[in-house]
Image 1: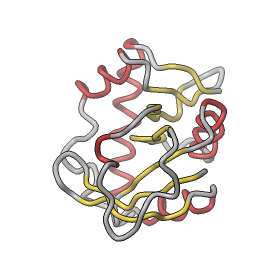
Image 2: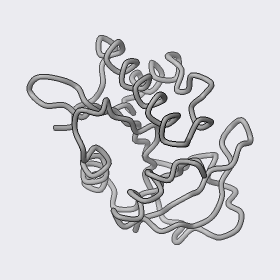
Image 3: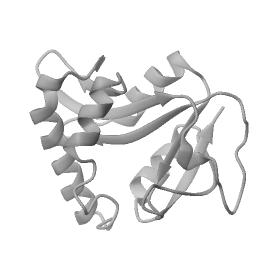
Image 4: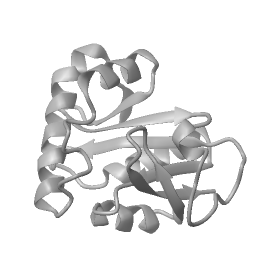
Length: 159
């Protein structure tokens, strides 16, 4: 089940992101969130703006992601390709799980598509697992975008 995150969920959310950072490092992706991203301040802002969501069952939270409908500034410039459509879209960011359940991306995509069918997502070049999964769920590689610190990300889109 997908529910909006609340501030009291923050300890569980931070634990999930720490697990994800450790998992990415062990999986050959040591750079993507190495600086402690996403920081608590960003997560609190996501919660306040209604952009952070939880994957949960009746017992526990096992996943988290941000979902924002509207133009994403980091997606204005795309190199080595082009977007499939300029229509309004939603962006999935900061998706992570605690390792207890599979299918978090599938849950997130299904939820997000129920809000807007046009989706975008990006990931680090070293995050081979995520690259495989987004293609599996129907996203197409579109090119390279640059996040706020200037580092490149592979951009995907699903329409």
